[in-house]
Image (cartoon, rainbow, N blue to C red; front, side, top):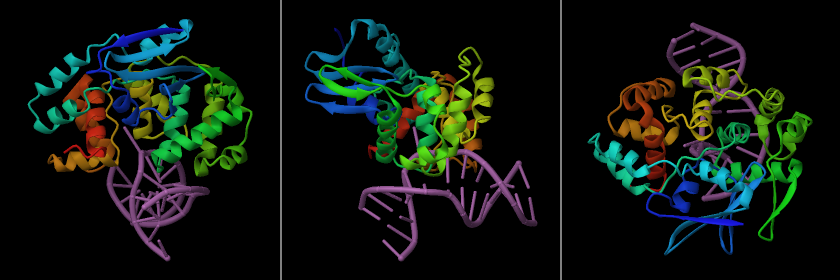
Length: 274
DNA sequence: TACCAGGTCTGAC
DNA sequence: GTCAGACATGGT
């Protein structure tokens, strides 16, 4: 087991996990357990800073997962330099957020389930999915279930996914699992090309594609537009109609800061910071 | 009872 | 190309 400690100012467990980019985590007596694929780690904040504890062999994985090589102070400084008060406030409020590098398949399944759904129910459904199809594991005395492989998921039919509460999204999951089973590596594609590929999957529209781009492939030039972002956009005086066009406008304006701004804004809007 | 939740798809105009 | 409805489900 290995523990690494980082300054908490730009790495806060509550905001990083609470900003809606990830669904599989759970409180434990020691802190918060975070699950990714088949792995688990313990996240904890105290007077020394924020610590990540993982199996020796998973330390590098979680270093990348939490994007710990990046200077988020510099990201925040660039956003504040734009001189837009609401964005500066949002970036200050959510300064402890880090954009995660999650597994693409798990991220795709999670955000396909997210459509027209609420976060508590998305989480509950994902936990049921893992419990039904994932391998049982133990981390620091706690049992958990790995996220199932595409192969494992492709074995099941729509009726199964409906039975665990996926609703009408069941048919999307069977199709996406079969696609992912091929194991194609898309990480080398440019953002626009990669988005095209994601959009070709059933149940993946612009918003879900952009979430996968941002949270799995770290494409911070993507700006997912949902109900909250659209609301903030209007309040900031935006006039364009239609989420896809709003996304295009915001991405054009904020370039590689898009994804960071989106997360700060989303968290700020939802947590009632304004 | 309605309406909403990190939307997407389909079928009119 | 644009737009309204439908879509499963659980919470308020």
